Length: 291
Image 1: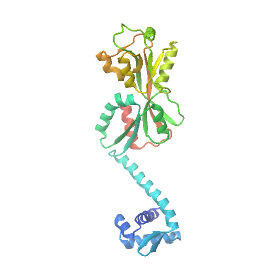
Image 2: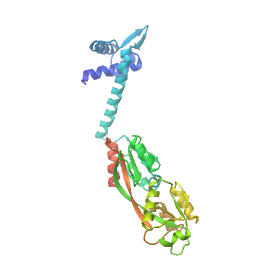
Image 3: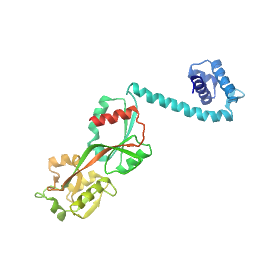
Image 4: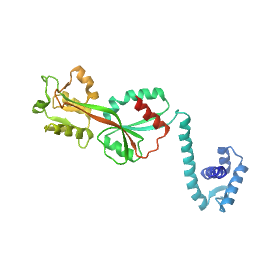
């Protein structure tokens, strides 16, 4: 598209939006005669009338309405392109739509965001907390730019990048005398996450390696609730180590000893396959990689 044609469309779009030559001129810093000349040149080039007069009102013709739909999209794309390209000059604006699981959002992300905002104070991070499965769906649907999710993950529409490892530890109520992995399930049932959470899958696969089939007393979709239930003495649970560090130090919980009481899983940076990474998203991802 040549500059001349683009300028004609820009003037046409403004007149069509305001249905006024004078208001379009004010918006574009052009005189009303200059606006009229450009519209006349565009109509002559197309061989079609785009506007008609009804009394003192300017009205779009059928051809004008059809062209306006395209012009509106073209102007929108031009503005979007301008915003994106401006980000290559500096990173003083922009937004990252980030999804993260509740535990990572509570115990891992705050320190990252604090440092990021210090470096890029004008980049907005819109945060969504939800389960891994729901966040992956939003990535696939284009509703999130990036997700920080615990594995395992399966989808042929996403790109996975290993970010860090997350440790799970088996914790029990205080007062147990040197509790051991092979004995603890005799005295306590297991409190675990709901199906089909990635944490639940990881724990079940881990226990199967040791041929352990504990009694399941509760399925809870929230690690904080599970933690409180273990503290009250209802059962034991595998919980993220970073989520129970305070309770382990205070003695409100204790770690079950022995082989098999700790396991790790990967935390992934998740993006859509073939996704265009704008500069703000690239800046955020690069910052996380270096953090």
